[in-house]
Image (cartoon, rainbow, N blue to C red; front, side, top):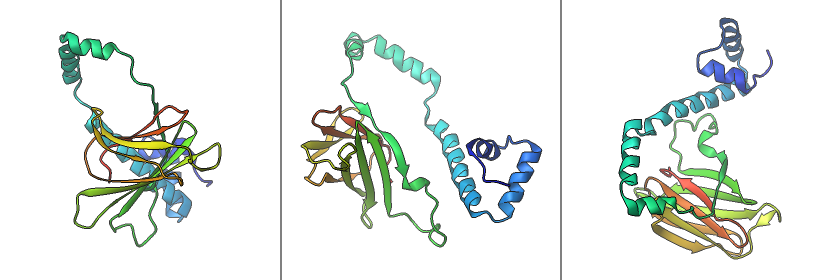
Amino acid sequence: MQHLSEQPWVDFVRGISGPDASRDIKAHLASGCLKCKTAHEVWNLVERLAIEENAYAPPENLVRLVKLGLASRPGLASNLARPAATWTMANLVFDSFLQPLMAGVRSGALNVWQVIYEAEGLTVDLRFGRRAQSKAVHLVGQVFDNQEVRALQNHATVELSTEQDQMVATTDVSSLGEFHFEFEAKEHLWLSVKAVGRNPVRIPLTNPR
């Protein structure tokens, strides 16, 4: 049996594969194919994350009540009607949390979490860590210019803010494109990279690990 493509894996982990296909996949996994075993673990994780995502969605009736409340307040309604500031949402291209761990370390705690985002011709490499017995999150990042294939060298700043645009911290990017923050972990933080000649790039830092 050949290695599976995405669609058969999606059907299998959701339990909607046909009996023949399901039997063949189980037999192939039992044969010890390391590549497909790893793919199976990743797709199981994706399916669990998709199921858990529904728990974060607010009830529709509550959303409707909030919208009605905002509409009934003229000051807020006029603010909502204003055009939003121009910025670009970054795309996640790598998350170390989704990568299968090597045998022997799967039960250990992850001390460092790495994510990589891209937008506006920039690549933003972020690495999060926690100090021992501390709630503070240490963030080290580097910004690369994809067009120049090197670290971003022109003047740029990085801002950490809340969902309500309240500033938490700000810093300049070094000549090597590097920056770092140390902050208390909170829900719904945003990282904004502001470089000359580009739209600000925004990255959601929901519950940094």
